[in-house]
Image (tube, rainbow, N blue to C red; front, side, top):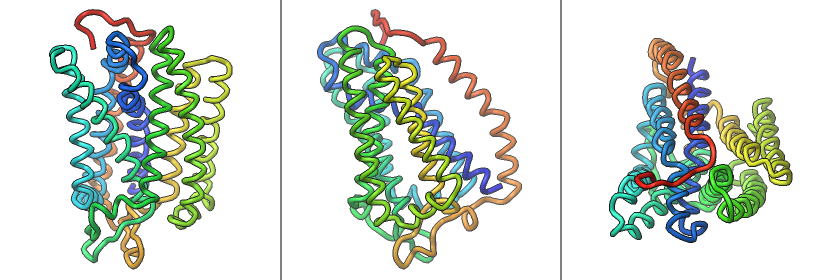
Length: 336
């Protein structure tokens, strides 16, 4: 049952990264790709109906982690406290900026800046957190984080953070090509291609660095069938994006980008299993795993029943919203 919840949490994280990844990417691209007020309005409108619903998957993942693996939740949320506060600050100011931007035009420059910062911080720091989980962190005998905030900003984890940022930027540009028209769409398409190439280069560099900085994870991926399956998924997504760009198929390119994100998250899971947080150095044997961190069997079973009942409802609502607001964005008075 603990393995089942390891997979469920991994799936929740993958869905969150796939959905919220593109609107975080839109926020980071916002000051660079929009040339006038109409285009800025169009970028906001492209994610307006879906951005808050996308974050539901992050809440679901955090809630599932808390209930299924309490020691992991306690260690990460206390040990990574400052980093998590920065992420929450980013998500909060991004929400405020989206809600206030079209209501209070006298402060438009401030709301534009907070929209950018509120998107950049999570897009970068999520990857930095993943990099530390892969690389391993110092853990004391009580299972608590024994390092500092600055120790989290090591070169490998920052590289993983940049990797996550580039795929979100590529994903965001892919979304914008679906929603925009004319010159804005053409700029988004060019940026989509550039950021996709950048992602591939950084992925290769990160893979090489993982061989030296996180050899245990590298060996787990290459030594497991799931690792090879996720690698095939990632490569299939990358190839699909390049093919779709050449053929001018924007929807296929977006789905290829989403597939790449699923493959990337899957590689992290395959490399870490059965650990949720790896220990580093003398703490390597103190890793928090599904064996020493899972809740009781009854708790996990009840949670699974709840998930089976409510997840289809959330999935159905998500599909309904995306179908309802499909197509090109038309900005009108009173909209985002």
